Length: 543
Image 1: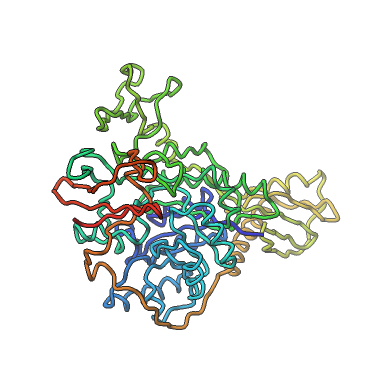
Image 2 (image 1 turned 90 degrees about the vertical axis):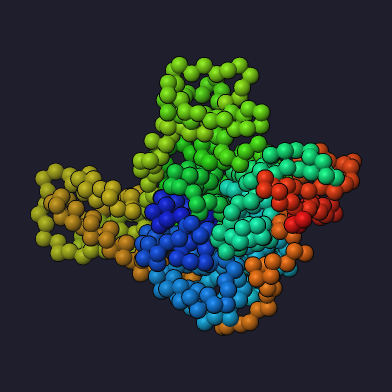
């Protein structure tokens, strides 16, 4: 049986805790340095707090060390890695293979998507280097994922299922570094892809002031079963810069969808962590930030009009609230406003409005919106009591049986008192009473037993948490000199599956006219476009 992991992002430890409460089997988070989101850093102490909470549910915590690391930073990286190992982090997501030359602790390493992991040969190479889990490139097809799984069956495959799509192949975007000295491979992406461009064909302007590289977002809710069948074992939600409301809602949506898929294949798949999540709301990914969703991540489309979230379409059945945010497109520009009086709002005929902020939804998610409980059974005997959780962990309390016989039946009171586990991570599924006589046991003593058992079972779960370890011997791996050190103008600043020719109806395979195409920014900077039609790739070079 394959354990399936729903992997959620965490900008902070508190957001990571909410992700686990809402159904994540694992979370990934940045530390004090070397994460691909420089604006999402966390202290080792905060990460330790997240690790402690996650491990209660057998959920894992991965830390991102997924940037290019310069020679003079290697010593600092090694110290940080040892600190993360010492607090119980489950794995590191890494990009720079030169880390393998360091004296590393026995912590598993996962290969970041920043390594551009698109082929069975690349994945097998990483497996040979000791990577048990590989994060695949976002733009792979189901067939490509299945081929990798077939040829590398022992390697766990991590696949992005939701969130922003990079227009460039992962780890191959040098545009931010080339233009602004802010490297996407060093966690400082300036998001060139979300900026406005003019499209030029043979020197003439075809489109002006359009977001030609701003891709719509990824959403694989309807494809989870096919992804699992293809060999994906870790389903990853993008968004380490997203707020708690986003993580709560999207994690909950995918957790429910994953549970439904597993229910259809109970002998093939199971969840990778423990506990049952009870939602206090109905998840809806359309309610959280998105730029619209692509139908095919292998041939993604851009939203030429705006890189911002437009939200859900407003229909006749939409219930609007005071304070809601609405927007619409006017002459290719996004116009937004806030509803001060929802009852008085009268839509203008012919305009499609979108709600990009739902005040009632925001209020609901600002409150506790889910709880996660681990099922336990309790067995009461003449001289001891046991609590056993769904993972088979057990705690017990022994006592001297000097109780008097009761005048009334005690079974219901015993069950009622022992079931009051509301402030713990546990919930009672069944209580069995094996006492030979109808003893009177004070409710205060039953409460004491209940608290003692819960505390002891928590300690037992932490003591026997199945921590994975992986021994590393320092090895030297030959790598290319990073673009950040060379600024080689013969290297593409982007390599994209997104094709502007295809989206504008000028695909050369479908009769489009040949010619020289380019993109021009507002400051006059131009990119020459090169179309590799055989491989359906578009490359951008600084002109």
